[in-house]
Length: 160
Image (cartoon, rainbow, N blue to C red):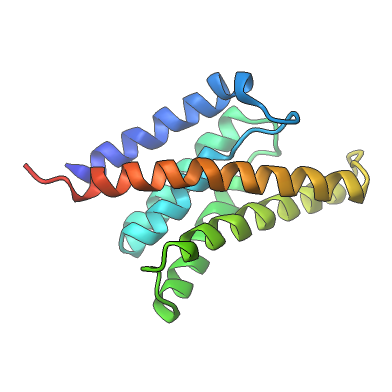
């Protein structure tokens, strides 16, 4: 039951990211809720459910976003696999480790998107602006991630 609620939460977060978060931009940047849910799934579930959640989140982000279709559908499961592999080697019980993983994931996501736009020949912002926007997005997403992570820990550990 908790996994079904988690999947419904992914759909809800996708809708929030595409609509309501437009009003909560900070320096024209909003947090990446779907990437945050991918990190939560990777830290909370076994590989099959984490990858499935990442595929769903990536598909929804591609379907509702302005990025080239398929980028997030490919990147999110790869990111999930990297987190799953990393979580075998390090202890994620420390409160700062999930935050660091989230911060690095947002930076990697931004780099992948920038490379995709460069490959497609689209006009790209300067490197200085890119670094500032990536840093702001990373910090903003980590702040929102802390709230989501606590909420989903409760949701996933709740038993009737």
